Length: 331
Ligand code: TYM
Image 1 (spheres, rainbow, N blue to C red):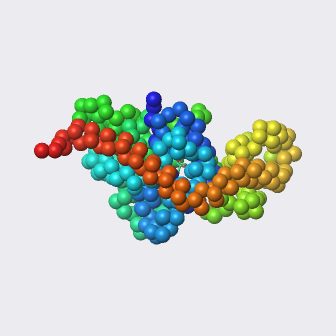
Image 2 (cartoon, protein in one colour):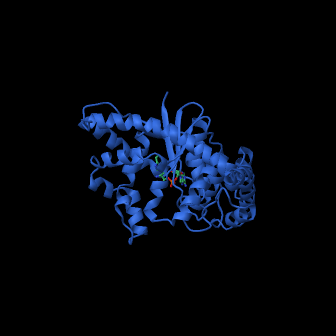
Image 3 (cartoon, rainbow, N blue to C red):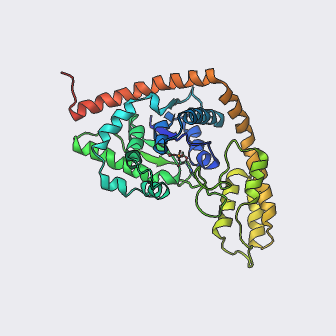
C-alpha cells in the first residue's frame, strides 16, 4: 500500500486555500493509503512566534484538521516535534543539500524579500526539513497545493542523491498529489495571486470567519468594468472569482454566471453575493466542529499522543535503516 504524508504550518487559521489545495485530498486519501498528517510546528519557528501563540496555533490547526474530516482512526495524526527522529534525518539530509540549490528556491527568495532582517539558516534549509518529513515515512504521495511543487522536486533530488551515493534503492521518489489533473492554486480575493495566511487582510477566507466577515471580504473582491462583447476572455480578477465559485457553488450556479458573463448581462454584485452565501454554507458545518474540537483538550491530547506513538514507530525504522546505510553503527 502506498504511503501518504503531508503537513501544515501552525501560523494562523486554516483557509480555503489550505482546504482545497491540501486538506480535501488528505481526507479522501486516508481511506485507501497508509496516511500520515502532521502539524508542522518546527517549520513555523522560522518567524520566531511567541511561545504561547505557537501552542494555541498548534491546537487550533489540530482542531481544524479534525473538523475538516481528518480521522485519527484512519490515519496517523501527529505533531511534527513529537517525532524528533525527523530532526535527525534533517541533519543527515543537510549533508546532501547544496547551498546553491537552496538559495535558488523560489520560497527562500520570496521569504528574504519579505523579511530581509531575519534571513536565518532555518529558512535556507526549510526544504530539507520538509524532505525529512516526507521521507521519514518513505512516502510515495504528498497532497499539497501548487506552491509546494518546487519543494517536492527538491525532495526528489535529495532522495535520488541519497540512493545514488549509497548505492541503495531505499527511498521511493515522492510526488506531489491532487485528485484533479493538476495541483491547484486557490486564488485570493485581491485580483491577483494566491489565497494565503500572510497575504493582505481581506484576501483570504478562513474556516473560522463569521458569515458577516465573509460577506464583507467577498463583496470587496476586486472585479473589472464588465464584459463588453460576447465571450470576451476573462481578466485575472474575474477568472479568480469564477475559480472560487467552482470550488464552493453547485454547477448550475456556475453555469448561470458563465452564460450571463458570456452574453454580457452579468452583475458582479449578484455573483459576489451568491459566492459569499455559498462559502458560508460550505464552511458552516466545519466551523461548528472546530469549536467543539478546540474546546476538548482531553480528546486532542489522546489523539496526538496516539499519533506520536505510531509516527515514532514508523520514523524509528527509517532512521535506523538510514544510520546503517550511512555507516553509523554501534560498537
Ligand atoms: P502551508 O502551511 O503554507 O500550507 C499548507 C498546505 O496548504 C496548501 N495551500 C494552498 N493550496 C492551494 N492554493 C492556495 N492558495 C494555498 N495556500 C496553501 C499548501 O500547498 C500546503 O499543501 N511547507 C509546508 C508545510 C509542510 C509540508 C511538509 C507539506 C511542512 N512539511 C511535508 C507537505 C509535506 C507549508 O508551509 O504549507
